[in-house]
Image (cartoon, rainbow, N blue to C red; front, side, top):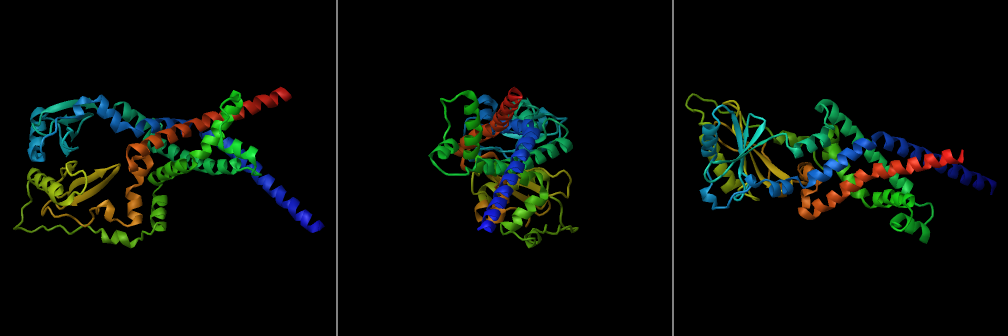
Length: 385
């Protein structure tokens, strides 16, 4: 009997010690990373609807839709832009659909948009716009990339731990009507101090799964070793990489390299008519920088997912290291290719974007409400003293 009581006391003592350590880590790690998490949450909210806001505020992005047969090929777009801007090096063209202007990738701080039916420039805007500024803050905290990206990556690791430790702190010791109400409901008519606690405690619980998903997908983009490990755990194998062997270049005296503009036109038509399965008129064509470099094309751009294609610059044949259609991929590769879409909430279109917007806003609020909880307790302790 005394032995069982002693064991029970030891277990309670261990639980109490673990609870104190968990609470202490949650507090001080939260205070240390709070400003970074707040910045990443707010900028993430804004970036969720980047494309939709741009389309509403930038008339040069839209054109009157015509038939696909009236679209100008890459060579015509190249010639039109080169005539207007003869001193700029053109790297590629981005077709965005029948009702959207083409973005031309040039060696400049400006972005060039062109009407896909007549080749006229519809807009020239500076690359350093508001959304680029927000993206730099989200990724690098407006610091040098080498420094800022490491800070945001490790702050995300800390945030991931805070979500787990927060769940441990949230979990009631006993389940009854009072604890259920305090754990799942916000007391809107309470005083500000209690309301602030509920906003931190209850909203933190409801957004937990989404916050974990956002944090984990962000970590996959930050840490290569984690991406490789996740790919392996999801069913991918190292042998898959052996399948993606670049085809050997054919370099014979009887074969001449095709002109890059003619090659770009051929690939553009082939992608639209034979390869693309979704959003067929949205195609990116990148011109090779060097004669022996491969052509790059991108298609099946839908809901934050895309398909990379590589073509031999001499034979224009599709190379084995090109992506398959996302619907034909095994789960491991589907997960890796969908990671960005899962991170920004584009995976389900507008409904999931709205959910991610609200989730990011709540994540940004957690350091604020958490700080006020700590500050209130600190003031209370001083008053008692």
